[in-house]
Length: 225
Image (cartoon, rainbow, N blue to C red):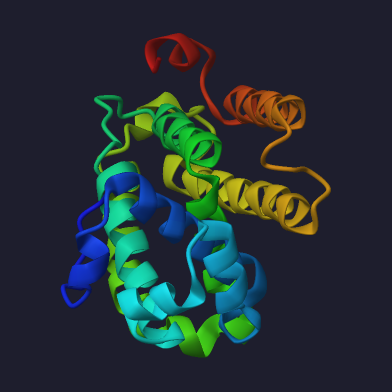
């Protein structure tokens, strides 16, 4: 289990790790798919295989449980996302590829967290996530600096401004990833459908290869790897 800031849940902390994981995952999925208002504590308790009374014994209230999850998810982002991003490359596409590999591993191994984080950006959930957005933005800024600071712009074509090329590629990545996210959120692609997910990643890597052909010098395509 991850470390988190919330320290007022002694009864929950005393549980064995498997039971903690079951409760957290059930709550992440319920809040992530339905939002705070529509999330059911009955469903969380049922999916966690505990009594509803025990859920409130551990957390006190629905809001306290939700706040706990926010702290827990942010700690997860620091430890399993930002902390795992390490690359010596100064090639922007290689850096982005490393970031993508972490995203892929997170989606495959921790789909509950992906579902919960995606719900941060649903307008109906905004009031409930507001209290943790400052910390979320700090974590996001840290990751951005890791990807964008110290890029080697000499790898780009001579007739292209490297900084502008990075900006264009960022726009293209954002649009592409929003399209993927929309398909996952709509159910068009299921996180648990290994074949469909693998096909999405194959298309994604083809997309990044095309960006390299468009923006990079040919010699840079080898030197930057």
